[in-house]
Structures are given as C-alpha cells and as structure tokens.
Image (cartoon, rainbow, N blue to C red; front, side, top):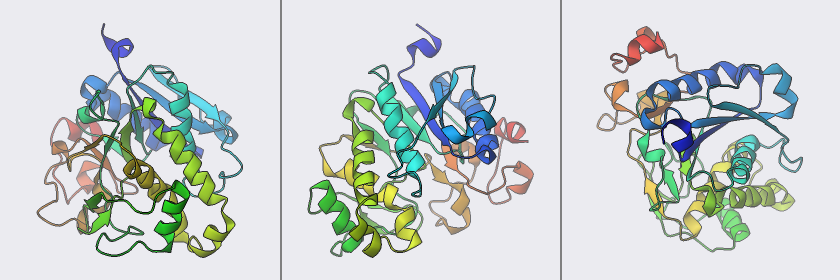
Length: 293
C-alpha cells in the first residue's frame, strides 16, 4: 500500500479565529513539501463552530476541516481549544492511527519529522519546555500550583525531570505543547481534558493558584505534563531539532543554537518573520530558502 491509506499518522491543529488561517495553510503546505514519508498523512483542522463559515478552503488533498464545540466549562480559558481538539481527535481516530501529531498553527515543518511516527515502543513523543515559566524546580518542593494539580491527578509528586532547552533549568517533568505526538489508544488526551476541566472549574484553585495570567496560560501545559509523567507512559524524548524555538533564537545558548534552518525537523516561530532575507540570525539553504521566499 502507498499514500495516505498506508499512513498511521494524522496531523492535528486548531483554528479559533480566521486570522490564523494564513499560518495554518503555511503549516499544511510545509507538511506536504518537507514531511518526508509523513507528507501524505491526513491533516485535521478543528474549527470552533463560530468560525466555520469564515474559514473556507480547508479541505481536499488529504486535509479535513472538522467543526466542533468546546465545552462551556472550559471554552473561555486560555488554550482550551488545543486541549479539546486533541481530545476530540483521539475520539475520532477509531484505532486507525498510531500517532496523533499536534502542531500549533505557528509551527512549521522544515524537514522530515519522522520521529513523530510512533511505533509499538512509544505512547508519546515529546520535547521539554523551552523556558521554565511556571515549571517546578526539581531541587525544591512543588509549590501550591503544582501541588493542586498533583492532588487533582491523584498523585503526590512526579520523579521524572527534564532540562528546559533555553534557560537550562532542571524541572519536574514539564513538556512543550507546540508540537508533540501521542498514540490515541493510550487515552492520554481524554485524561488531559478531564484534568484540565477539573482544575478550571475548581474555584478555590482558580482564585488562589491561578489568580495571575501566567499560571492560567500555562495550566494546559502543566496538566498535560502531569498526565504524561504520572503513569507508566512510554515516552520518546525528541532531539533538539524538533519544535525548535526559533521565536527565542536570540535567547538560546550558543552551544544549543541551530546554525541552519535546514538542520531542523520542525520549528515554532510565533511572530518571527519567515522571509529568508529577514532571517539574519540563522542560515537558510535551498530548497527551503526558495520555498519560504
């Protein structure tokens, strides 16, 4: 078998406003152009129902727009759409896929991201966070924020640690959510949504531990990390070329900084310009240079 019928991987992203459509279309084209053996995988774009009529063209060529409604319980919370889209994708796979690859709209594939294609030896493929932000230092007891998350998850602590890529801090397991892969049969995304919703609706936790914007913004990432670190989850830790934070290029230590864009598999760029003539802090070689131009 060849082509999409043989693929065990589906890419997933989420559009919560028409202004993200340009980025999503660029992400789709990057997968099709540089995705290697994953280039013909199906791509599902989950759309908040409110914007379905405002986002034409997201279909065909293996791409499918899927309207869905985010639960009112979490709909107004930061990054609730990401959590809900991943959980819904897990429901829809019906054991047809071994890998759901989440990629945020402001990510780009620049070379074959082959390690996102999970086999029977891994339940998830992950990168550590770029910077600590609300992460819990491994050398210190967890603070009230993390204690609250652990309590809601039914655990007291997690033993696994990671080192944040940019600021090099040793943290309790804290994973990046710009891009990752999970095996839908493990049910991790539904667990994530359940834990996230439980804490969003916990008024005491929200009033005390999530009173500030930063802790609210990163609750989705903290709950994701707790789910992935609290069970017997077989994890594939991805190399530095995956989900490389080009948006933080000027902050990355010199010994970790990529010299050429082409040596990477996928990047997060957020609001950084992608015109190669403007990318003066990294070399962009062919064929990527012409494609970006």
